[in-house]
Amino acid sequence: MGIALDLAGFRRTRWTSFLARFVYGGVVTALAGVLGHRFGAAIGGLFLAFPALLPASLTLVKQQDGRAKAADDAAGATCGAVGLVAFAAVVWLGAPRTGVAVALPLAALAWLLVSVVGWKLLDVYKSR
Amino acid sequence: MIGELALRFVLGGVIVAIFSTVGELFKPKTFAGIFGAAPSVALATLTMVALRRGPREVARQTHAMLFGAVAMIVYSAALSIIVRRYHLPAWLEASLVWTLWLAVAALLWLGWLRR
Image (tube, rainbow over all chains, first blue to last red; front, side):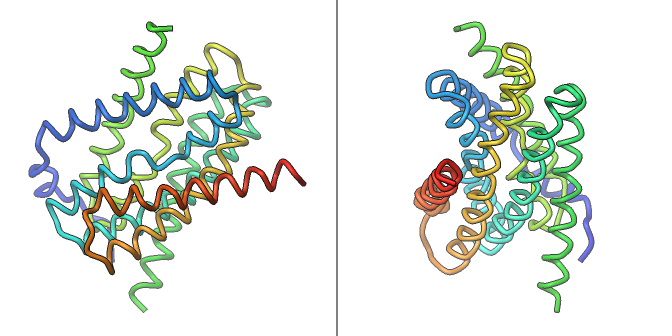
């Protein structure tokens, strides 16, 4: 199965859900900062990978597209989480060496590449 | 402190909204789901950490983030199975599996500390 643009699905997305994601994401980011400030680097760092956004995303998908699509969305998030490991590893190793301005974009790219490869492997497995 | 929180809120909100919206553009849903685990909060937070405390603190936080990210793999995989098989509200399913994330993340981190 190939990747395609879902413009119809995108057009179904209401501006209120964009606003909700902005607010939700802002709150989660602010809380992550508070956790790091209050409890130190380890706790703050752990919670950088806390799945705070996935429940909201799944709820929206389930409402718009149904349960099976929500399950597919979560399966895709698994691939994204593998990419998240790559992201963290690149920043952990790269930030002290190359600086954060280089490490963060490289890490974002690593996330994307690893996630897409993971998704493709999942796609091949599912279509067997 | 309030100013920094406000900046985190805006920066985090914008990055999360962008990643989420980009995810909406694609199909199939398995591919769009990748963006549900995008490092959007991490990008915003680590940018702020870098500006205030420098690259070593960023490295410390992302070292711990490794354990959280492994726990998120377990979380997402479990959620995919639960959502497919059981008929609970999606938000409840995801919230229940949060305890799984907490348990895995804590075990991994404590295991690392005790090595």
